[in-house]
Length: 244
Ligand code: F6R
Image (tube, rainbow, N blue to C red):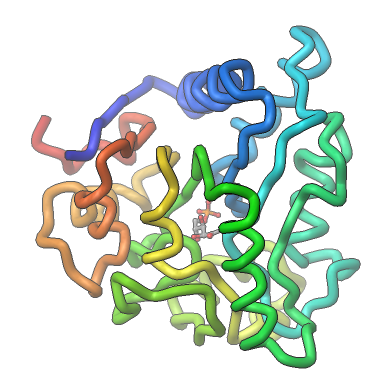
């Protein structure tokens, strides 16, 4: 059963999500966090930075695993998800950079890299708290419609819709990579707790399909219905199509 928390503003939902993350870290200082990129968690990361600076939230023993990376972008590329994470979170908190993991988009043997990413999550003890966004086509990580609900970390083709949605981060739509490496739906579902943040009207259909639709590969976020500890943290616009 997906728990729904709705807030008036993006700022409020970000604060609430950050509170859940900080509760997790204070309860277990060596927590393993699963992290997302994209615009949705930026407010949450800002609030975590504030908590680190003003309230001594300590990331010294935290380990992190990001969901995904564009295929072909090296970590130093301005639009890589490694750069995104450094700029939006890691550079501003006291996490050990060696304990932060982002899949490599440039490994020579991507299949072997995907396997070792899964193994590294396992060796770290599994993910305690996974943060997710949701794509307008209902994807979680880059598990586009049609992805198996037991899929693992692998290379995927991005949908046209996702390429269009993400073009805002690039100079032109032609610069958006067509493929990515992503944790699978099955990988994500193994996290002990999951929070999904979504804001804006553009997410309302995906949110309602995920929460109220059938569990289906056509909306991979619907697989979250089968998780035992999952909370959607929404603003009013993203929650607008829910019957609550
Ligand atoms: C990012 C990710 C994606 C995004 C989703 C929403 O690591 O895995 O699933 O969460 O595409 O992106 P935004 O938040 O930019 O709308």
